Image 1 (tube, one colour):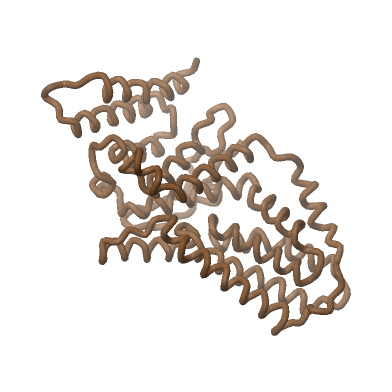
Image 2 (image 1 turned 45 degrees about the vertical axis):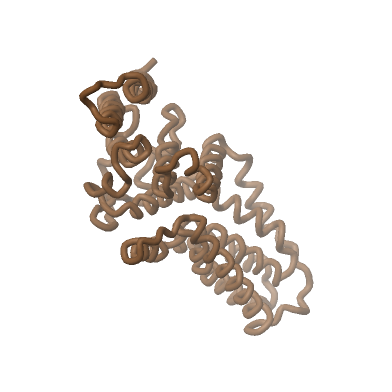
Length: 337
């Protein structure tokens, strides 16, 4: 067994031993929580079980969950807590993009719905909106644009109006979908942070979706009706055979192991976000940021078949988030095996 694999299990094992079975009289419960968490982090640093920079984020999860410090106290040395929901969601989105899971989802939605120009536009809009709920509006548009162009090129006769409507539907629905979830677009997180600071009201993932999702769906329907009935009328169009979509799906092949892992982590994250109020009955300190960071750590878990590995030696782009700067390049210059 390699040093990394030993460290991977030794860290949490020592945490459990110290936190649950060793009770020094001179150490308070909070002090014990901090000591046990620090021991876990130290073991992972020494053995490099995880990338060192990722291990440095582990206290943001361990300190609140173990009762050592609150989330707000823990991140004072990092930044605002809401930033870590953005970071975790952002890295999860990058994993989805890298393994083409977003493309598979989009193509399946379009193939299930689209057999006329109106339905094709609806399928494209639903795919864009759904993807934009979880990954950036820009990334969604960039991914969907080649699919839209391929559909347009297949319908070569009298398709000027359809071309314009389809391309507009991609742009509009990508923005509309970003409204539905807290991580859909950065302004949502900024608003949630401001509301929490000014009014001490926490807008969690589920609370946001209760408002954002119905609003997003309503806007999507209005946009689709406008594009297909008012701006351009496709009421009398005959059904179309879109073989391009089926060919694209066939080219993707079967889901790879890594794609299944990313899908599993994604589904578990969404379920955890939606059921957080219930989970807090068992883990009172749990919040959306911790869930996002746990998802991020899972992406680094598999060492032989790594889903995500950051190369910190080559950095080409920086985005300032709150009080911290996240250095990244497209796909984080990742080696996604």
